[in-house]
Amino acid sequence: MLMDFILRRTEPLQHKVLRYVPLFSGLSTHELNTLDDLLHQRSYVRDEIIFDQGEEGQAIYFVLSGKVLISRGDQPDTIAELCCGEFFGERALLEGAPRMAQARATEDCVLAVLFREDFLNLLYIYPQIAAKITEHCRLREANRPLAITDHSHLLWNHREIPNPLTWIGIIAVTCLSLLIFKKILWLVVPFLLALILYYLLAPLAKKMVLSGFSHRFAATTLSGAFLLLIGISLLMFYPLALARASAWQWNVLQYLSGGVTLLEHSLLDLQQRFTFMQNVTFGHDIYRQFLDFTEHFSDKYLGNLLFGLVSWLPSLLLTPIITFFLLKDSAYLRKMLGGAVPNAFFEKTLYLIHTVDRTARLYFVGLIKVTLLDLAMMSLGLWALGISSPVLLGLIVAVLCWIPYLGPLLGYAIVMVVAATDFPGNLPLAYGITGLFIAARIVDDLLFLPMVVGKSLHIHPLLTIMMFLVGGAVAGVTGLMLVIPMLGIIMVLGKTLELILTDTRLQARHRYGRKLRWRLANRDLDTD
Image (tube, rainbow, N blue to C red):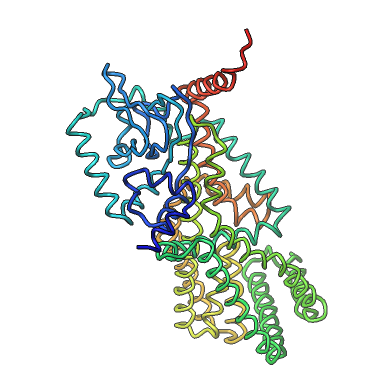
């Protein structure tokens, strides 16, 4: 108890203010610090509207200073006047209903705001807070029941489908972003890898924080463990690569030679089957180029390949560093973005931030899940067919599938080259590999992708195909890989911005709030 008393005496000011809220008075210093990372602090001037009756609720508010008036347009009497330590706005979150009343500041006040998902997670983690809120709602309903009425005429204009101008803007911004990303690919790749790693490690970091560790310690531990794992893997791989370099080079040349033979036989077979191809010379040109590649692979191409891999190493080393800062400062980044917008648009901005984060998380984590499922399916299938190194080939094929359309074809070509080299002339095996890839694509397109990735991006299939073509034309392979997640995120941005810009009530509240703040700033400057 003495240590707890000492810690509370040395608490930051924002923690002491939060303890004035009865819901949080029993939390420890660490729990308050965790809660403070989720809260957004907002200042309202006297007579400024916090939210409107009938508005969609996205957050709960806690009064840290000042007073807030709760009223309804269809009732002349005031419902409640809340002061420091009280909270409001929870009913819309718990019941999924529109705001039952309007909230307006009756004097200058400071509020702590908690977004819907963070609030519901808080109730799950701390049952005592959930019990207090339930009791509070029961008493409030008993003292002054609020009848549920039709607020359709008050609700902000929610459009599920953006208008044509918004769609044009979404597609144009997506194409421009792909073009920019192509120019700075050296920075985009480590950032995307760091983002994927962040979403994979974030649940572990959250458990560590809830167990009593700080955000800095969790971020340092997880990022350091990943970096250590990579370092150990490289140290183990380096002597193995030196010892087996000559054998690996011979295997590569052997498989490339097998690929040349397979290509030669395939072109001859096509020319024998189709008479119009007998006088066509493009097959011979392709064969000569492929033969030149295999014969001069070591002296002409291997050095450039290794140099390219080494040149990417500094950029890839940024991945654990970016991951560390995302794990440590993600709450600060959310607060910074939320604090940059006016009060009238704050709840919509919170919704936008969390929706973009959720969309990216579901997509990238879903992509990793699909990759693991493809790895298992392809490894088992290649093992059953008797192909050598089925796990390695399965991993290559699964990663290549990140490139839509082109990736699976490239993976199929690699497996066919290996099979043609190890089992020359084995037509049943070639048919089996073809059937395996067709089955894998059907399962991916009809089962894995819709179930795992499709839930995160609500994009029409026709639009998906069109954007694949546009992304490939604008940014090549980079565009093919990035166009769908970019489109999904920019769609969320476009829809939310359209809602904000077309909501006249929000615009009026913003202008009214600016007028109130201008009057407050000039109240002692009038010399007349």
